[in-house]
Length: 283
Image (tube, rainbow, N blue to C red; front, side):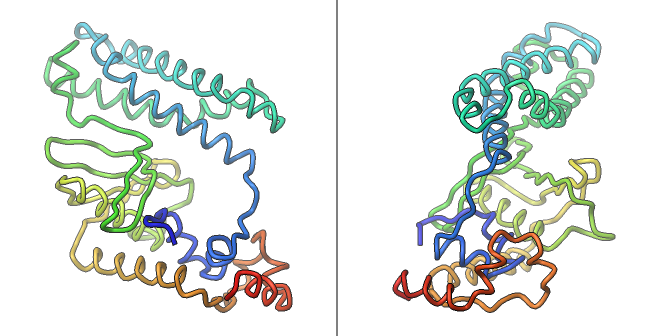
């Protein structure tokens, strides 16, 4: 088992322990998809947009209208996306993906983080009457997208969608296309967000709450980092680590609806195949 494991393993673990075991212990990972390639390009574009934002904010030289701030951000983020696509054009071609179609799709995905930054900068500018270098220097919060976090102490790593950075503190965000539950958040999102808060706290930041944005951020639900939730998330994480280390094949899930779209469905139910796979690994 690696020194640090991705937090998204926990989502798979809570959905189906056997699926996680097949993929991460028996190395039965499904092949990368075109969606995976596009997601990687989007993450690259978000990193470029992080790097470019100081210049965007410093270009706000006076009390400009909202549309002017929006133009600065949209133009900058288009360049970030174009740079990421150009860097990956050979990989796109090898997978039969159109550069134009990829740009159109990923630009739609990039709009939400762009809008968040536009509104954040515009609101702070109008409230505090700061511009240019002063606006960037004093801007609170500063928003970071696609932040890579890792902790050897916790034994986890994750790619966090968004962090709002305040002096000495931070608020992490998860974003999903799913609809929210009637109250609170889905349990998979709860544990993932708690671990994100724990990772940020390991960086020496004060972290009191996190946000899950359902329907791509249209509906936000907050979670406070309490000792009880921290303990629950740690217990889940410890159970996950034991699963990866013990080499004991978990039982099949009782809810077979979970199996309908699983890429391992046929082999998972083939006891002879599974026995051979375990023997091959020396378990």
